[in-house]
Image 1 (cartoon, helix red, strand yellow):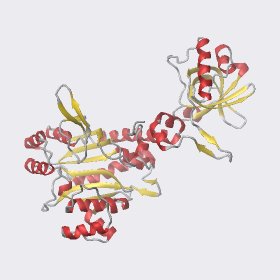
Image 2 (image 1 turned 90 degrees about the vertical axis):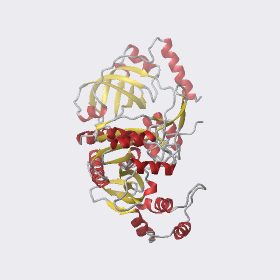
Image 3 (image 1 turned 135 degrees about the horizontal axis):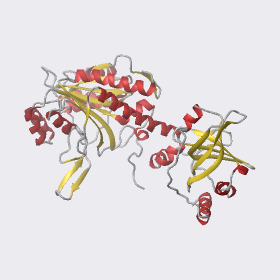
Image 4 (image 1 turned 60 degrees about the vertical axis):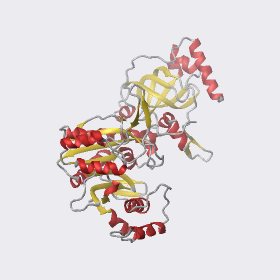
Length: 481
């Protein structure tokens, strides 16, 4: 235990010995948020406020304390002679520390340097901070730096990160606003929000490894959902024609800057439309969110300037491979394609199956995807990569599907849904994973439908200029100590 922490525990003991409630549970009246108090400054206005102490400056009989709430910070001024009884006790015994949460009552004024300040008349300790918080510090050269900048600590101790790093707080505040505007946009467009199960008897709707658990009562293995697509389509069969769900999905796979095993997905479905309609709707959706968050259609991400107002790029997967790599893979033999693949020095695991579809997708993923900076729709995907997707008319090998890429990240995946039960069964058999209840639902009859899945955490990355998905998730998956 650090010396400073021992001192704080001694202060706690002093409070207990003086019968002071260290963790009171009163209902507390607060005048307003700090940012509103400062914005609407009125001289001598009565102020009731709570905040966490982030700095203490002791100058003889005067004490300056900086406190903050979620939104802003403000200076409070304490003239020790003005305080009485318990209020004076906190100051006299040097009880207050950085990190403590306090309640103050006083009057607004401005210092000679025009800093908005509260002249405190009453003060109450609401919660004692017993640990040392790593706030911003100045080094010997006077340069301000952040003591809490280790990435692993930031993700593991998010509660500390949110207190000391303003940018982290801002990211999650914007994420909350994005959720709000997603629902507002979809509800305005007459979509209905629905819920589907998280525990699945059969995993499907995507090609991914599931998390497996066991149901004690039913004595059967079940899976955390990797996607909610199958259940949403069953709802479409039941007669709902415009639905969406904001869901938690779980995939037992890699952790990197764009992958977390637990993530948030928006899926929506609409009947009597195809993926071309969804392409246009997707753009309207992104324009709406971008405008609401940034009040602009042009934003900065990393070193790029993104323009959501310009027409989105639309390219065939074959076309973009040809444009970037100068390789024409249309109608190429498998033997020649493997040779091209090997020459590109793309690493694959030992279980990789060298067929045309897999090779084409891997070439795009490893050599072309990162070049899709401005919003780009990639179309003309091979059928075998999309088992739930309708074929393009008069083409047995390609499907009506697009993926949206921004700054090299896959943001959305959409297609015209396959609703032929016999073709769907055939494709399920091909991937050796058959959901007979879904086949039964398709036999009841699913109307022509298109759907889209949008990775919300990655979308938040784009709209907050954040380079890692872990920085958009409060508590990303981490290895235990």
